[in-house]
Length: 157
Image (tube, rainbow, N blue to C red; front, side, top):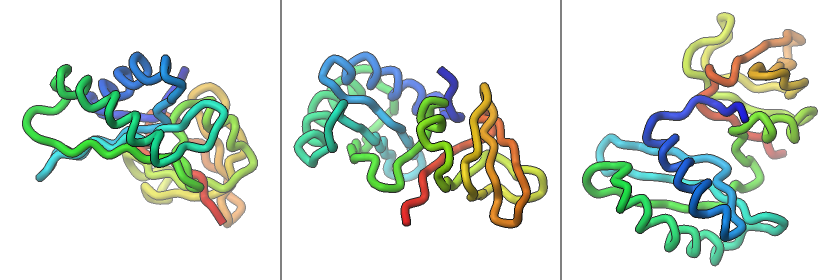
């Protein structure tokens, strides 16, 4: 399944999540790894068929912490933060974008897109293969490859 661009460390954490959290009914919606200063791994999770609770986040932290430590995803000390996706949930996989068609989304791109800048927002018109199509408020339509997206969120109003 196609996905937005992730760093090597983020991809490793996502792979560990898929392997070790899925049997417990959890899915990693997205992961952020910040390696500058005090390193942090932030994991956004959802529980299949239910609202993600604070207890769920604590359980995922207990499950994932020792695994990330053992696999040495990040050298040195780091903080592990587990959170629910929230109302402005992240979009990472092509299937996440498919579910959001018709909704307003925000994109943070790796580089400027078509002279519009790196931060875009608009209505998600469709996703075809590896390309997201946005309808901008000024009437323009913009196609953005998933590989050019660093982060995507629903816009909650």
